[in-house]
Structures are given as C-alpha cells and as structure tokens.
Image (cartoon, rainbow, N blue to C red; front, top):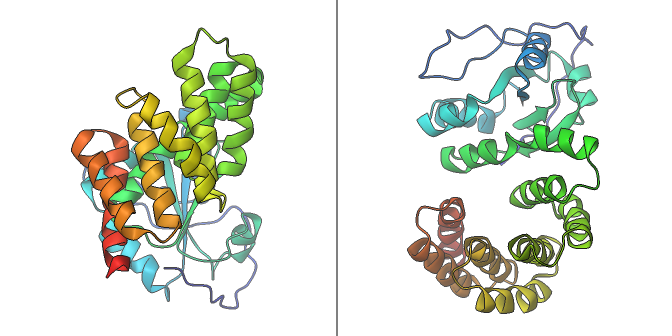
Length: 279
C-alpha cells in the first residue's frame, strides 16, 4: 500500500529540519531533529540511518506512524538505527536524491549517506521489525566486502542478508563467488550457498526451477541448519506459482518444525496471505 501523488513545493536546502525531536525513551523510536543530525550521529555510532519519507496526505504513512512505529518489536529492532523523517512535499530535493517514487518509503543509508536498502509501502509491525533486524548488519557486511572482496565469509554473510531482503540480483553473484572460493571440506557453507543460489530463483520469476533445486536439497538435509531457510523458500515458490494450498501447507510445516527460527516468523504472514488467496 503506497501513495504516489506529489504536491508542489519550494526546493529546500539540504541542511533541513525534518521532524520535531521526540523525547527519547525505551518506549518509542528516537527521531533526530534533522536529516543531517541523523547522518552526523550515524558517523559517530556506526549505525545505519533509517529515513521515513512521508506526506501529510498519505494514509498508509499515518498507519505506519500510528500502528507500526510504536510497536515494541519495532522499537527494539529500531534501536540499531539512527532515525529521521522527511516530508516529501516540503523537501522534494532530498526525496529525489534517493529516488523516492512512492510513500511510505523507508530508506536505509550508510553513515556516509549511500543507499543500502529501502522498504516501500505499509508494513505491519512484525514484518517491519523483521526488515529492521535483517537490514541492520548489512552496512557492516558491505564494508567488510569492500575491504575483502574475495573473502568467502564476507561474501556469504552479505549474500544471506540480500536473500533475506528478497534481493536476488545482489545475492546470486555473491553465492557464486562463495562456491568458487570455499573448499569442499567446508560442507555447511557450501550447502548454504547452493541453497541460497537456488532460493534466488524463487524471486526471479523462476519458481518451478527453484522447486526442482530446493526440494532435493531439503531431502538430503532435512534437519540441518539451512532446513528452515529451504522450507520457507519452497513455500514461497509454491506461492509464486499460485499454488496457495501447497504454499500454506509448506509454511505451516515450517512453523511446526522450527517455531523459534526467524524463518518461522516470516512464514506466518505467508500463511495468512495464502489462506486469503486460496479463498
């Protein structure tokens, strides 16, 4: 759910006031007074910056503000970011800089202001908390990757994060590099990279091909550390094929078998959506 109408506005300076400072406490997100304040704080803390691009007329933005941001899970996950809000009608130049085409649009930036990730549209609290938890280490991982571009661990960590963020175009070449640089004796990492490479197909309009690769991997590794990830992507591949009943069954099995895993948490909204579409 997004809004795309733009209102006319005077171009503002980039040293801008974005949002009044909220009182900082454990029961709310700590918003910085300005975008530049958030970046300055990130340079000191090393955290990513989360920028909420919104508009007063945007109903999904209001839902995000009143339903999602105050949720305890979001507040806990959000503690690992520096936060700012930007009204696109008042500050269109900043919105254009980060290619904000629909709102709400949460843009995640490095301390230097480079784009790391974005979340577009309204998110309920639990899925948004998951996005925050997955995105938080990405800045550090990309720094490590820049310093050690041929290191298998650096490539694997970044690839797994990109996969969790459903960004197969970035994940797949990193998984390929992991397989080229990881000795065969490191079996778990190689299995993870093969599984991740196959899972990328589910997000690349090739869900049937993904299933042909994922199901044999799961059969060979039914209880290994990568089993929850394999099961989630199998459920998602069925969903992409409009086989909503099988998608729900696969996701429910994941929750039953791995109820404490992050992938089980991600399966719950998939179950709900598959039930809705199955009628």
